Structure formats: structure tokens, C-alpha cells
Length: 503
Length: 135
Picture 1 (tube, helix red, strand yellow):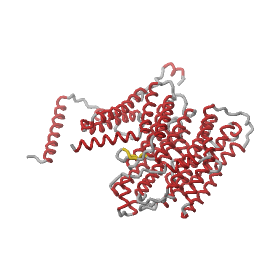
Picture 2 (spheres, chains in turn cyan, purple):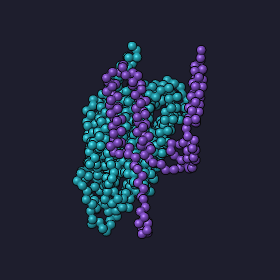
Picture 3 (cartoon, each protein chain N blue to C red):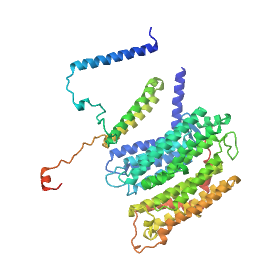
Picture 4 (cartoon, each protein chain N blue to C red):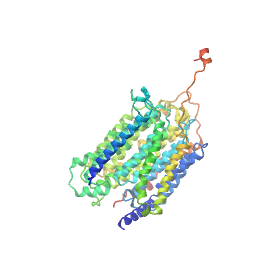
């Protein structure tokens, strides 16, 4: 019977796809187990956190041991390829570090708060980001973005008795709802235009069809707006400072690294699979119809310039790091501007580096907030003497965020600028990027100056930190230094990971 | 013979007659004791007149969400049940996993006490306190 054949084929396809998606299945089990353990062991408040850590380690193991598959699953809804695996590993590392960070957070561990939901939501959000980084279909992409957003709305307002956290959560929901509304409208227009939601089919349609440029530009810009909210690029960034300031530090760290990585993965895949002429085999991508290069270049210049200039005036460290993360999104967009594999590899390298330095900076903010209850730059006076060990780490992170040698941040920027300079049309963009790095030095130094150069009288008292927290701090600081000196493994790995599954 | 729209018309007519008979029968049988509250429009227990900007218990949403989850479950169950024979054990196992996760959600809500409706706990003034002028 004909119908039976279709059903059998479908069942086989689902079975094969699940085989491919073992890490995702592991994450799902982690999520469920975290809930179950939280229900059973009510006394141990961090039990869900331990389950999440264990589950993330298993997921990481599955992710690393998976043979470098290059295939589409679930009827081409998702793609398992080296590119998505790279981003999945970044997301997983970020989530793992954030969960470990959360165990030290005083802000979260107040009395009368259950943390089961907190850790399981992080696991669920990680699953959504995994799906986002490998989704091949606009609906899949939209659903994963929604799943990710819904978890992050709740997490941003998790400390609900703190007024600014609730405010952050509410603002995030409203902006997020508008952005996803705009995005789904763009998706529906694309569907009306091309008759398909699959990125490959959109590509082959665009390659053959004669399309009105404006009719294509409007929906794609709407989709870019939706993704742009998630990665906070400039015309769509305005939620970032408020949410980053209000949310618990751990969640701010997660939003600034993991959800940004997932958004970038989606953006790159959307442009490369959807709009690059796959017939063209060279190093540079030939883009169909739209002038993506100048769209991205414009967004990039706006993003990094605004991020850096506004950061100069911030007095709250979390807010400062929020603007700094906007600026970093701008730097990473520069890598995408050149539209070639070297540029994407540079973005991947940058993300790997950004993971350590940004999480490290946020961890420092968390530890200091634990002791002083403040996130103000003014209150960082004399910290270099009160908390010498972790302050040294913070200096490494700040230097790395600025992009100075011998730290990993320099390597990230170096590869982005190298990729840009290959294309003589975009030397101006590299110049803008360098000027921006110089501006960023000003506000990173402001933090440094408060920590070391403004000595206060009562500097005698010192802060004591638990051994595990110092170990984690060094675990973040050492790679930041190490990858600034010995970086060829990451570069090789990133260059192997630019391969997006092309049907 | 009736056309398709003819059948719909028939439904309309029967519907009107059915409702008419019920109302007529009810008005004959029921006791007639109107009061203003009884005559007010029924709005699920809310006061029908006044500003809509009132505060109501957020627990409504929790119950609504739990309901919605199982609503969606039904939607997904229908197509599954239709083709169940052809799908075999594989689909059965898949549906069991789906059930398990959904049920776990309910158990979690239950175990954490999110389904308990917190009873209002008014502070009843005690006469002796009032006399002493404490409050």
C-alpha cells in the first residue's frame, strides 16, 4: 500500500535522525532528570545543578565522539555538520561554566528559593540553542528561537523579588515578542515569495528565479531583525543593557555568550545556505540577489561604534559589559562581511576566545557582588589589593576583551582583521574596527584603574574566596592567556569547522 | 433530497427548536425569585461591570498552562491514533516517551505545590487588641 510506504519511510527517517542527534537526546534526558531529581531530593537545593553538570559532560562526550557526520535529519529540518558541532560545543561549554558559576552565586541562593527550575531551564535552553545552531528550515529556526527565548525570559527574571530583575524580564518578553512577531512575518513573506521554508529549496529557487529585489529585501531584513535581537546588533540592541543589568549575573553571562553563539550560527547558516550560489566553488561566496556584504558591514559598523561609545559612560559593570558585548557582536559581524570561509573561521575563533574571556569577566563580577553586594565601578576601588588573585585574572580578561597581545582576544581580532584585509573593498571596515578597539581600551582601563590605581585607606581587609571558585576563575583565565600564545589547534579546528552541510 | 446547505439549515432549525423547548420547559418548572446579582450577566465569576484593570490571581495562569499542555497533547494524539496501526511499536514507544514527559510536568507541578490554591488567610481583628489600641 502506498500510504504504508510513506509511513515506513517516515519512521525510518525519524529513527536515523535520532541516531544523528544523540547529544540533543542526552540534553533532553538531562532536562527531565534534573526535574525528577529535584522532585525526589527536596533537601539538596543544588541537586538539579549537579545533574545538569553531569548531563552536560555526557553530552560533550557524545558530541566529541560523534563521527564527523555531514547529514540532514528529520526531513532536512536540521543539519548535523562540523559547523553546527563547533557551535554546539561552544554553547555547551558556556552552559556548563554558567551552571558551575551558579553554584557560587549568593544572589541565587537566597532563602526560600527553589533552584530546580533554574538548572533545568538552563538545560532546556541549551537544547534549544543546539537545535537553533543546526536548524535548516525557517520554521525549525523560529521554533528553536522561541524555545530559547521562553527559557531566557524566565531565567532573566529568576530573582523575582529583586525589582530590576522583574523589570528586565518584562522588557525582555515585550521586545522579544515584537522581534519574533516581525521575524515570523518575514518568514511568511519568504514563504509567499518562494513557496518553501527549507533553506536549500529557497536557495535553488533564488538561483533560478527573477525576483523583485525589494520584495526579497523586506522579508530578509525582517528575519535579520529577529536574529539581530538575539545577538544584539545595533538597531535591535536596546533591550540588552537593561536585561543584562537586571538579570542574575550568571544568566547575563549565559545570554552574552551562549545565546549569542546560537544566533550567530543561525545567521551564518541563513545567509550561506539560503543566499550563496552553491554552484560557485571558490573561496569567496557569490551571493544571490541581495548585497549582503554591505548590509552586514553597515550593521557591523553601527553595532561596534555604538556599543563602544555608550560603554564609555557606564558606571555599572554589568551594564558596561553589556555594551561591550554589543561591541563584540559588531567585531564578529566584521568577519561575516567578507563572505568567505576565512571570515567564518575567524568568527568561530573569535567565539571560542570570547567564551572564556567574557564568562571570566562575569564570574569576577559575580564573586565581587557576593562580597560587596554592588556592581558599581566606584565600588571596585582597591580590589586589586583586597582580592589579589582573582583581580589578576580580571586584568587578563580585560586585556583580552580589549584585544591586546599576549591574550587570546588579540588572536581573535587578528584573524578577523586578516580575513577583512584579504578583500581590498573592506579595508575601511578594518580601520573602523581598529579605531573601535582603541575606544574600547578607554572603558576597560576605567575598570582596571578603579581596581589598582585608586588606593583606598582601608585596603587592609582582604576578601576570602572559596578554593573551587578560585579554581574556576583560573580555569577561565589560563585558556585566555594560553590561547594567546599557542593558538594553532583552535585555528585548525575552526578552519575544519566552517563546512556547512550543503545538499 | 436536501442539498448540503439544506442539512445545515435543518440543523439551525432543530437547534432553535431544541433551545426554545428547553427554555420554555425551564421557565415552567423553575422557581421565580429574581435578585440583582442573579440577573447580572454571568462572566465566569468576575464582576461584569467596572474597570477591567483589576488584579487577579496569577494561579489562573498556572492552571491555564497545565490545561493547555494537555490540550495540545490531544491535538497530537489524534493524528497518531489515526495511523497507529501502520506505525507499529516504534510509534507506540515514541508516544509513551511523549506521555512520560508531559505527565512528569504535571507531577512536577503537583509535587511542588503549584496546583494548590492558596486559601486567603485574612487577619481577623481581635476585640481585645482593638480595645488596647494596638491596631
